[in-house]
Length: 120
Image (cartoon, rainbow, N blue to C red):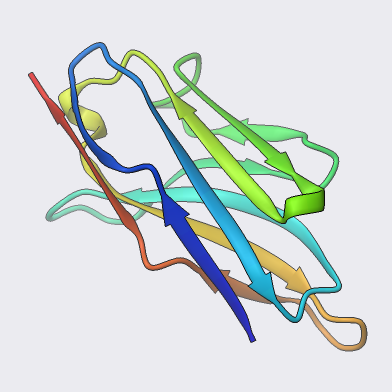
């Protein structure tokens, strides 16, 4: 089994910054794509960022230019640096990892989520 543990959420004022971390542990041969998604109350979960094992990142339109994702493959950890935050960034942020076992097919795992609240 694989566990994803997110950290770094909290309350920040508009214009401020937060950095989220997500560490994967368990039976891992390799991790292909890691990513961040968020879900605000009453809204569908949306893509924030994805990043490949070679650190090629893609972002949702609403965060481009403000958020940056990075990863440390040696630590099986992905990060999300969030700058110039606004109230619209308030949501529960979830980490996702696509994990390859030594043998078999890949599986998607999700973290439990971390709350980010931005006050105006």
